[in-house]
Structures are given as C-alpha cells and as structure tokens.
Length: 289
Image 1 (cartoon, helix red, strand yellow):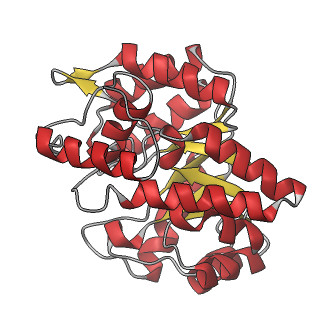
Image 2 (image 1 turned 180 degrees about the vertical axis):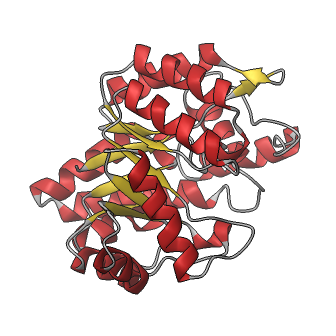
Image 3 (image 1 turned 60 degrees about the horizontal axis):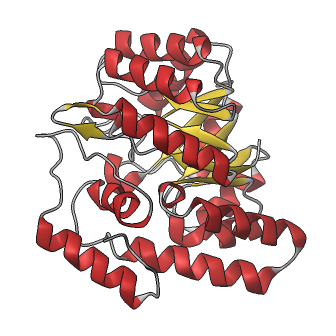
C-alpha cells in the first residue's frame, strides 16, 4: 500500500450530509489521480457522524470512485465501531484504522485490549491512527512494537505527529507507515513512509500527485517546491478551530462545497474566509470569486 490517500472532507449543508457536494468532490479527486480515500477520520468529522451518515457517505464515495478505501472506524459506542467495520467490508475497504480510546487516557493494557478486539472483529488489516494533539495520547513506536510482540495484529500506522524521528521509529518496525502531517509528507517519504493520508489532498490533489511522482522519480528539488506550497497553504488554516478551514479552501480553490456539522464544529465567518482568500492570493494562487 502506497501513495496519496485523501483524508476526506465530508460536507454538510443545512444540517444534513451534502451528498451532491461529496459526489462531485470524490469525482474530482479521483480524476486528479489520488490513490485512495480515508473517510471518517479527523477531516471527515468522523467521531460526530452517525452510522446512517457513514453508510450514506460510503455509498456516495464508492459510486464515484474505483480507488482504494481505508475506513476509520472509531466511535464512542463499540456497537457502532463494529457496524462501521461491517460497512468497510461491504464497500470493499482494503484496511480499517482507528485512533486509540480517548477521553479516558488509556494505559498499555487498555490499548492492547482495544486493538485486540478490533482484530477479532475483522480480517481486514488494522492501522493505528496516531494523532496525539487531538487524542491526548501518543502511540509511540515502542508501544506499537510492544503490541506487535504481544500478538496484536497491526499492519501499519498513520502518524500525524509531524515528528520525523517518530516516523522513522515506526518504519524500523517493518510495518507500513503513512504520514498524516501535511507539512512533513516529503521528509516522511524520504525516511521510509509509503505515502500519506492528507487533509490537504482535498485542496491540492494535483500538487500532491505531482510531488509524490517527483519523489518516486528522484526529482527532489521539484518535490521540495511542491511540499513547500502544501505547507504554506496548510499554515493558513492554523488560526481556526476544527476543520472548516479545509472545507473553505476547497470552496475557494475548487468548487462550491458544504461546511461542517454543527454544533459540534463551527463554520468560518465571512471575515475569516476573506483572510483565507487574502492568504491564498499572497501565495500566488487564484481563489474563486
């Protein structure tokens, strides 16, 4: 497994899943050459989606692409985790993924039991999604090694720390590592990551595709220039809460697009969108009017 996987933005409109925007988005990203999709993680607002919304989203996604699918299955309700696993299997996912248990910080034994139970629920490969800035818990290479040594079936890690030393530590374990921090995709590839699961791939999929192809072909200077652009556009969203910054970047650079699911997350204000627009112009990009 390698390449560019989109940490898929799943838009809402008037409080409901915007399937029309989602279908158009998946079509566009597929044509841009991404290698696959990663729904129900952070960028998808995954923890806030109901089972019916997850089912509808997967139906929409797979009607509009033939690309690979890795499904993030976490929910606060175990029955919903299992239901999401069954949806992943039904729609042909090549793997599932999950953050560790959150809110109550797990110790190693809780971590081991959780990922063991996941592996007992499916034959699909399991990827740990490590995003400690959101979960409050860092699944380090030492912890992953211990899980594997204790017989837990871990196929790989999506590491979103942006810590290249940690990415290297995961790579040394001989598992598949997919980078989840948009500012460090190229450095992660250079130390052995197989690809990325990227929020910015919603916004700049052609640039992502070209950067990955440049890296594979040894055109490192060109790849570095594209990584720099990705990082600079990503930086424009840092002042805003949640993930609507990405959704607005899709709207500004690509096509009409929905927003986040309220009230769990809030949409950006008009003045905040204008600041995003101004930032894109400073970077030499041409946002839609």
